[in-house]
Length: 154
Image 1 (cartoon, one colour):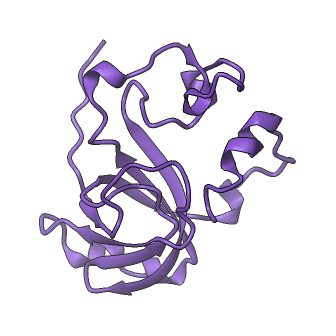
Image 2 (tube, rainbow, N blue to C red):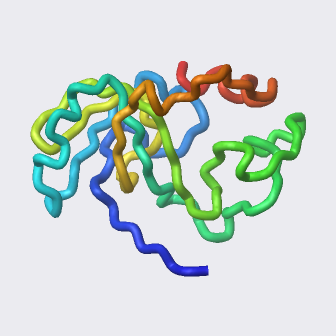
């Protein structure tokens, strides 16, 4: 397997210092774009209402990585599902992805709502949400996933 090297394009700043599973919907985060990029790298980004933020779960320790099946949130009442059939943070490459609402842009900083990562999280990439890239078909998912998500954004 070849090695892939990624460098953060910025970092997240918010009030969440502890990794938690729920209550992310009202969290306002500030993403500060690295000084190594010209500020114009986010020109016109504020013409979009939503962004996809790709980030690195930097606090996940090597011995916590899961490569096979597990119970979501370690809840034995839920089915044992593969790591790629869930959105847990203990993934092999520690990559997270969240669609957020863009609140405002100030200089090289983006203020977003609903980013489910903690203060200091490295951001790997940002993409605008475009309807043409959203699924055209009805989305289906198992009942257990609805159960674990019921308080995620509240």
